[in-house]
Length: 116
Image (cartoon, rainbow, N blue to C red):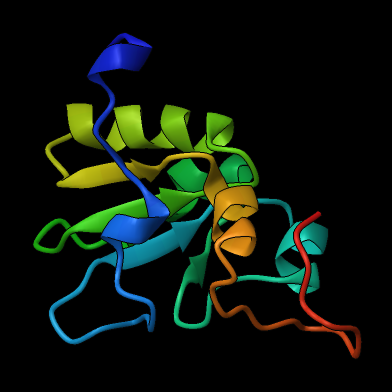
């Protein structure tokens, strides 16, 4: 699957408050330290390195949006899921775009949420 064929979604196309009723499941594939610094509330965290071992945590009967820092890692995971029959889309420009749009994030640390 070429980069042009990977299904994508932009931040403005997603509801401001996630998870939204009937909305997509967000799967964050960043590393644990990136997740802890700041992530989208309601997203599930499956680091890319653990993805194949935990793929059963991603439902096939629901729209899935895959997220990373800039959209590169998540594009690879999105392509894999799409080839396997999931309705998956990559968040274009990732968490950097999410943060730039002023969308809400939460942190696992005592610091203000940020994107690493």
